[in-house]
Each structure stands twice: as C-alpha cells, then as structure tokens.
Length: 337
Image (cartoon, rainbow, N blue to C red; front, side, top):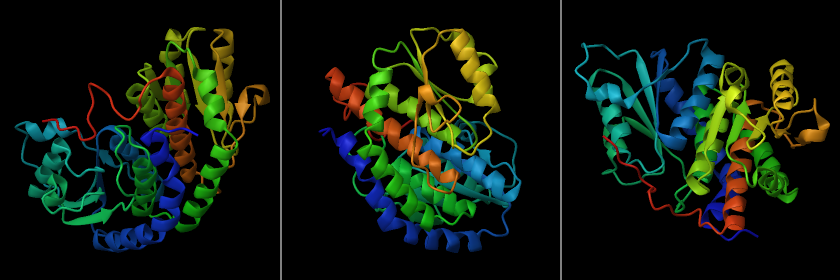
C-alpha cells in the first residue's frame, strides 16, 4: 500500500463523491436558477483547476450550444477597452481560494457586471476568491496537504458537471464504484510499470477528457518530474507526434463506446514510429489495452483518467524514492500576479 499523502488523498475520492454529490447537485441547481438570464459562461482556474475549466468548457457547450470563455487572468492586468459583462456568470475554481490571479480576475469581471460563483474548499471570508464572489459552492472534500491536487480535482469535475446542467448523483455513485475497482485491479501499478523509464509521457483523449489528459500530464510533472504533455488525439496528429520516439510513452484514453477512427489513426502512426503506447478503455487493440469499469455517463469517465494518473504518479514516485507530497520549487497555494 502506498504511503504518501498524495496516494491517501487520492484514495479518498470515492468517499467524497458518495458523501457530497447530493449537496453539490442541490447547490448547483439553485445557482443555475439564479444565473438563468446570463447566457455567457466564463471559466476561471489555474493548474489543476484550470484543467477542470477545460473539461467544463466541453460540458457547458454540449448543454447550451455556446462555447464558454476560458478567461486569461493576464487580461485583468491590462488597460483594456471598457466592456460590459452583465450577461456573464463566472465560475471560478480554486481549492484554496487564495490564488491571487484568479481572485483578481474575478474582481475585475465582477466590477464590469459579471456574477461570480466560487467553487472552493475555502471557509474563511478572508479568502481572496470568496471576497470577490457573490456565491460559493463548498467542495467539502476536506484537507489536502500534498502539493499535487487529487481528490479536489475529482470533486471539481463533478461540481462543474452539475453547474453545466448534468445530473451527477447517480453518476457519482457509479464513478465511486469504478474508482474502487480500478484500484483493486491494480491498474495504476500496471500503468506505472509501462511508464517507468520514459523520456517523456504524452496523454491523449477526446472531448471533455482532454481536461483529464492535461491534468495527468501536470501530475507527472509535479510528482515525478517527468516531462509530460496532454493533447486531443486529433491535435496530436497535427504536429506533436513528429517529436515522439521509442524512448517516449503514450497513453490513449477512451470510452469504449466512442468513435475509434482518430484513435486508430494515432495508434497506426505510433506503431509506424515504434513508439510504445497503451490504451485505457480502448477496444481496438486488445494487446495494448487496460480494460476499465466505466460509469454510464460519458462525461464522468474523465474522473477515471484523473484518478488513474494520480495513483500512477504516486506509485512511480515511491518506486523512484521520490516524495510526491512536496517539491522544492512548488507550493500548495501558488500566488501569481
């Protein structure tokens, strides 16, 4: 059994889903009623929370037909033309609530008429983001001490889905069961063995799970120090694949009922370049796949990718003698301006 805080906190995600999903659904439904007259959705987040925003951008678009704005905090530092944001609702994601650039962006948007909703674990009214918010959804996932975000990412994915208009309660129960089965089946340990010794690791996915691929790459960078990247399968074929070699590893994530054309194209290209790869949940190359127990809701499957990556990274770190909970160049709360 892995001993790191990162692994312990990741493994508490199923219980967080089971205990909090009903409340998240109720609070999200109330907020959706409040913002019904604001068709523009703005998403704010950095790091893992930013990857949740990428996931959320797909879900809001699929529900409304309108692509949300993934706001760039740098813009709030510039002398921009006056703009009216009264038609906008801002969903600002920050586990700590203390990310200064996210709070500053929320304040900037609020001053221009936007309604701000914070998604955070923060309780103190002095938290930077809560000061800027009109409303808050409390994650309720409890303390998270390791630098790499784990259970808070899973929690934010489900809150984002509820805010986008999805029914998350049944999906949370199914996903919790899937996560426990994945751990029991040793999927993270098997993937860690495949990735061990890689020069770089690339994670590929489609649709909402692109956010999960980005976060999987971030976890490898934070916890093990392996150069890692996240792409959509189509984007990968538009150039990045040219840098792949037999020294690298590629992980392809897919729901088994998704179209396989782009994944088959990537698989063929990787085989031609002799790049080792493995499929999580794919069914077109049984000899290079790890089967997964999927929840019925396709959007919820992104949580499986996030969870697998978290425990895989914790496993790789332990095998390498690395403490994934701390990093000499990183802090749990990152304050940028």
